[in-house]
Image 1 (cartoon, rainbow, N blue to C red):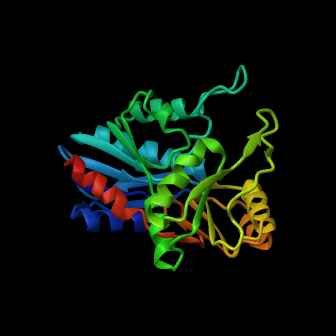
Image 2 (image 1 turned 135 degrees about the vertical axis):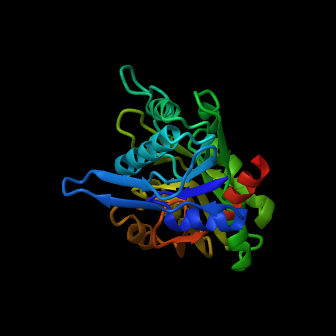
Image 3 (image 1 turned 60 degrees about the horizontal axis):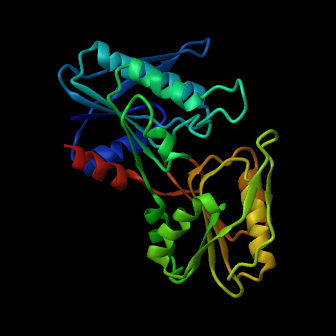
Length: 292
């Protein structure tokens, strides 16, 4: 097995290969003046089990296209099998047709990867794992919540209250509570399917004089997390942290969350950002080792 770290996941790909004790096959990349990507493999991949590591966080369209190019290249060069490790899976939130005529985007992305020769996909905390299991390529969805919770435990948050954003995500808080052991609950949310606007419903939480960690899969614009932090602070929580697997943090989202009263934000390196403190490399390396 050989690991090919893509342009968007160079450091993570190298770390995964080191932990899994696999060979690294570096690539050459450049951008043409018009913005198009050029990618060249530097090692022979014929009859090799190839693992391409490429996150698809913003600029997601460019990162996805590079992933398609690398996968199709490995197929043309007669790789034995192709595994796409996609820590952040772009378009996964568009996991159904919410309104008539909308595109089923995640299905389209997976179908394109299949056409490019991908045999299996490994991702981390996808928005809707149940949908992924119905698509054209086998997908293994890993959870980094234990890694995030373990980080907070090492920082002295043992016994903190674990919260999720929305009842559907309460399993995330329950998973974190297995580590922090301070109880768990959810912040009640409601999303308008047309506007996408999220509102929080009034709910009393067991947060008074407690350390609280609010877990989410993705923080993008930060609007929902800001409201959640404000709600918990109004209920007299002591320290409040935002934790997420995919810290997209578009624009000034980080600053706004901190201004809302959060004591800090912690994310993983599924997405490169100033708060990407927790590495998912051990999680992915273990999954790859189980598959060998």
